[in-house]
Image (cartoon, rainbow, N blue to C red):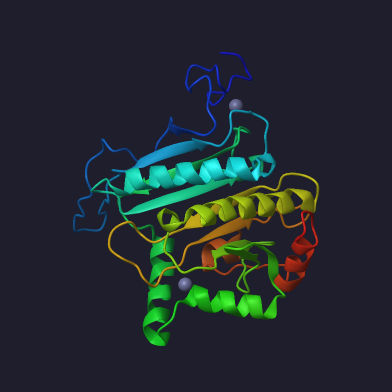
Length: 291
Ligand SMILES: [Zn+2]
Ligand SMILES: [Zn+2]
């Protein structure tokens, strides 16, 4: 097999010869629909089972295109395939959570430069999601309002942590940012996941993802290694307290340094962030493309 052979390239024999966006089954899946069903057993080493799925979403047929170089129109096609695949996976009886995300950059361990993201269907609600759900649900119960709607009002009011916005979505550096230049894209309207997007909102979301990605890559003139994580409610039952958003975790803390999760982060669960949210937001706001 030639050294530069890429299974995601049209003509590889592994994907169609012509496509815009393509769902590709992961060659080394952590979860599989064929594995034993979820059967929590009592005892010290209880297993959750691994019945689920791991898909790769090939964003574009071109191998060397950074995600920031995809057009807003093309990002809309990615959003559409997320919605379609989400519906299919959510319909599986064992799926509890559909996790749509992207790791990008060699520093994050991505060996494949071809632009792609991933979709995992979990047979359980993953622990960090569970923690966020609990906190959002507690706030909703105690204050009779959604924590995300409240934060959004706060951010739009002060404006000091805003990065960019459009008719349906707002991007800001959260007050509680843990990563240098962390951005949250939050929906203006209250809804729990991508399947609730209106047609106009899907277009707005694609446009804002494109803009945020361009800002990241224009910040220091090279593609920043990052994680893009869609935050949605679990697929079973209603979750009226939850509010759809996307988190971006960049791991580059300066043009030459990466942020590592060392003793204090990994062992104590406390992030040391050497940037201030307001200053980082201003820097990103002033990076092209500006509003
Ligand atoms: Zn490729
Ligand atoms: Zn809300």
